[in-house]
Image (cartoon, rainbow, N blue to C red; front, side, top):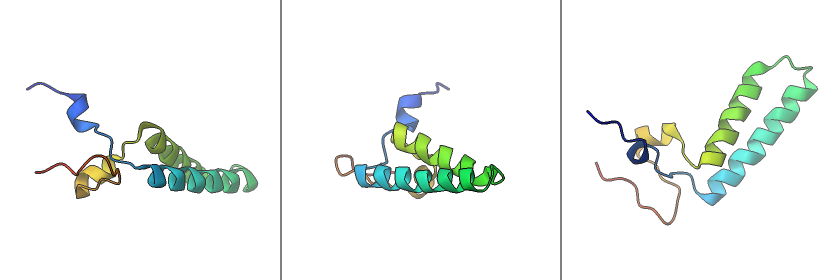
Length: 77
């Protein structure tokens, strides 16, 4: 069995989705900073949002076959 990362990590996060993820991540990081670095969960969520926005790939979207990119249709199963 050959593992092909390109087939799994197809772009599935659109531009509007990326902007929303970055804005929410910024608010979470501000809350993390203002709480005296006590809320590690908000920082981890913010980092996950930033990573998915950067790579334009959300693993959770694979489960529901969700694709917010206008240029790519959802994968047919």
